[in-house]
Length: 329
Image (cartoon, rainbow, N blue to C red):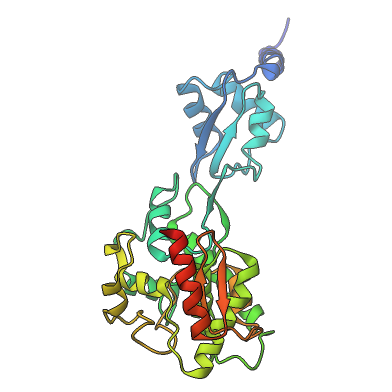
């Protein structure tokens, strides 16, 4: 006669064998559509399997998913993040995915020449980016970033990646660290003859160069014009600084009244550099600002096709202005 203990052991073995066989058979079950899935801090396999099952995206029963995770040692250390689940993924694929670092990454590109208003607008539209600076003014933001100078110009234009849960402040901190690194490396190899006292002044001048031209072949010449003017005590007379001083009221039409109205950024009415940058300059403009005066030019005027015409004398400049303004009209 069979003992009860033997019967219990035998029954348990049969049940376990059945569960194992059933689970193994479901290993090839696959997801029938692609989707993005969030795992939150503190989530575990039972929580994840139930949420997937409730939304109809788990190819097996929650118990089977949990059992397979334990059986294959894939159940522990799942990582919080946002994951791209692809159509056709099998059960073990999901378990491996949730333990990997393959979280969904988003990208944001900040072009050279954007000002802080542009950065704020772009950050505010970014998907899955936590919004923390919307209600902060520039003074508060400066304190959070540890910036003593004007905020403008202290963020390096580039493409940055982020994941769900990152914040707008996180991206600004990374862009600020990058700008500090870039300006430090370029400042270290600057032309010692330039009339710039510190890296922040280099950023200011670079931002003006950035807004004056998008052509690499013109950057050094424009930088020379400004260095020559600073050395001679002449006003920079840069239209982009005036436009920045007008602010959001500027409608795209630069008038003589704008050039004559004094603001802190009007380089037609004030000598020297403005008190802060007018945009975020790229490395090429920073480098141009730090090479010193490589050309003898004092003036330049836009030719209407993106290029600039450079002159050494006022008479030559006036002739160029007459020529190219006639071409525009």
